[in-house]
Image (cartoon, rainbow, N blue to C red; front, side, top):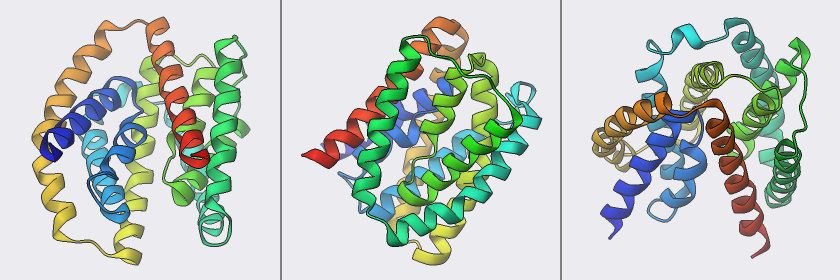
Amino acid sequence: MEVFLFIVIILIASVLQTSTGFGFSILATPFLLLLFSVGDAIQINLILSLVISGALILKIRTDIDGAVLKRLIAGSIAGMPAGIAVFLWADLEALKLAVSIVILLLTALLILSFRIRQTDRRDFVFGGLSGSLTTSIGMPGPPLLLYFSGTDTRKEKLRGTTLAFYLVIYSVSLALQIFFAGTNKTVWISSGLALPLVLAGLYLGQRLFTKIDQRTFRFATYAILLFTGFYLLINQIK
């Protein structure tokens, strides 16, 4: 049963990440925690997310907005120390509750057609929010997904830019994880066994991406955000 659950988790999460640019850590991490320790689950998530981003980077390089990517990375580097401080000294459960409420409220606004204008400063700010959430609760996706959805970014640019961003931020996060917490055979053996599933997810996700239009893509992003918000909320109030 555990092997079957592992296969389903990795395959679906890989398809989602490949077709939208988001979703692997959001979908996989909660379920990987049922099978592995917290540290192992996070490292497996980071390794497989890096594999997906690395495998796609050449194919999607023309979809990457280099200027936006640089501002996002600069913002994330500035935001990471704040996230570490929150992780070390703040009440993480209260933070997750607050994040879940903000995600749900902002998603509701997006569904009601609220939009935001993209600017250089906002690129930096939302990159900072993503960086701080990466080092505090291990979830960089929601700020970027909210931002790009609110600015009506076309799906190719959204996926390309975010996957390139993840390639950087997850590399740094994995290095920090290994340096401060160490690693073990379970992480690397499990990640190795998952690679064929990730490759299958890459193939299926890429085919799916070419078949979905902008409207369907937007609804998929709303579904990911709602899942994230409700998961964090229910996890804190149960």
